[in-house]
Image (tube, rainbow, N blue to C red; front, top):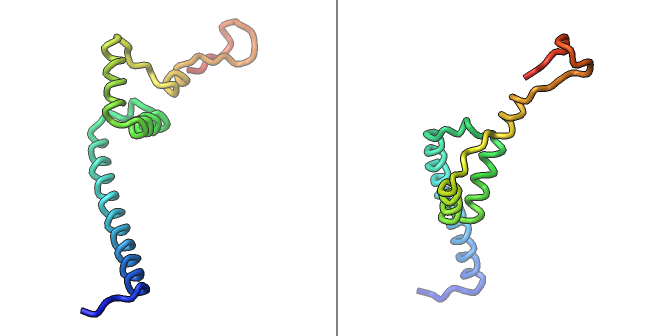
Length: 108
């Protein structure tokens, strides 16, 4: 087998890198799709989209084990789930400008 020139060797290495990058992306998409299927079984509608993204983003940032430990620690301390701010805003009583009499409309 003839020895490859440096230029041929470099071209082969670059081609291998491109192929590995494509393969890594395909595996990454498959793994994300698999995790996405898991989410369909969770009651995520209790969270706003922003809360969901924040929870997942923070869990990924600190690592799964650290996130689970922190959340279990909250449960052990008796911390109860808080309603989402979006739900709290919906329940807030908003008074329109005017007097405090019964004729003032109240919107939930």
